[in-house]
Amino acid sequence: MKLKKCLIPALAGCLVGFQTYAADESGQRLFLENCAECHQEDGMGIPNIYPALAGNELVQGSGVDVALVLIIGRGEMPSFSGAISNEDMASIINYVRNAFGNEGELISPETIEQLN
Ligand code: HEC
Image 1: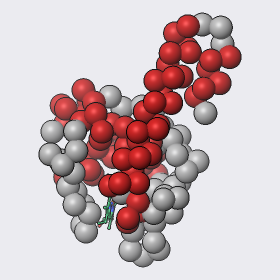
Image 2: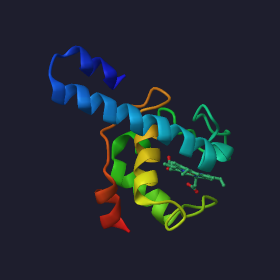
Image 3: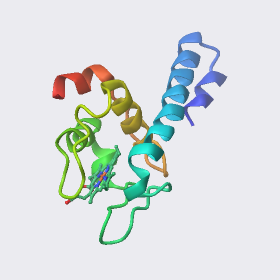
Image 4: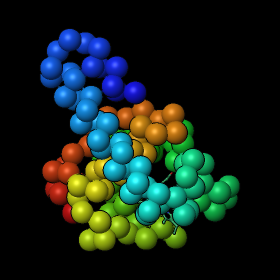
């Protein structure tokens, strides 16, 4: 979706587009490996058991809030702190905040590092 930035004849915009795209690719793979078992491939979750991430207010609100859920864990959901790197956590968060029709700003591994 951010690739349309490449239509703007500015190298910087184009690079931002590619960076986002790369994050989406590994983010999707990591989501399928770590999260889809509960939240499902399409982010719709399972009603009354696993909340949908699609259209989710917390997910679209702030990347830091999503990072805190992953670091601390929540209810039945395990903590991912130490289980995945800050880079991978950022990729997953950026994926879920921009997949399934969601829209959110990107978060950096450095920001996640500070939360740990
Ligand atoms: C073992 C099942 C399971 C796995 C794996 C899992 N989750 Fe969850 N997740 C849950 C459950 C259950 C909740 C609701 C917890 C509660 O509120 O008590 C939840 C809540 C959340 C929330 C908060 C949603 C809200 O509306 O409050 C987010 C964000 C989230 N998960 C993202 C992820 C991501 C990203 C991954 C992969 C890194 C992941 N989850 C992996 C079960 C899981």
